[in-house]
Length: 162
Image 1 (cartoon, rainbow, N blue to C red):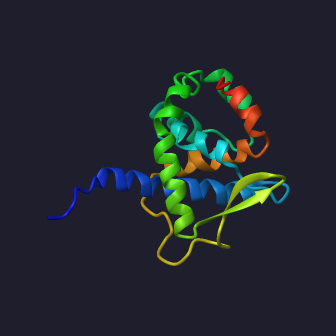
Image 2 (image 1 turned 90 degrees about the vertical axis):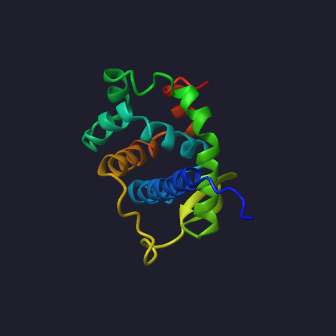
Image 3 (image 1 turned 90 degrees about the horizontal axis):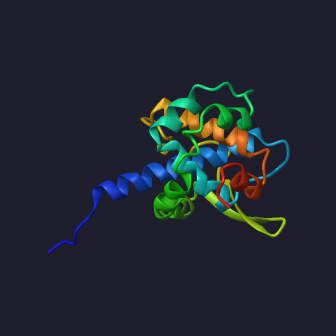
């Protein structure tokens, strides 16, 4: 008898893998120096991206728009974020685990911190995250653009996650 397989969990974890890898790839592409995101920054990606109101707001913003005015204009992004981060922590870790296990992300140490770098110059053949909504990818790309300018501690303070 075969064991139970929760297909929704797998699909969520696979989607998390691609979103976190996309975030890391975009983060590095937009960073002024050779930096990569750490675990704390990656913990914020899914709770914002998978939250419908936040995703719809962020995906439409111009890349040049700074993060702080967006948060001031749209308090729905921050509302309940602490609970969303806690609720999505396991799938964030699972998605990160899949991304590292498959080589999409590589764990490195930068300035004494564990960070996650996109493991390739571009998406490996047959692994490109096609089919993910443009709202999700747009949100991930904008978050990467904004997060590169803040330390993890500053982001947690800005989002009220002390």
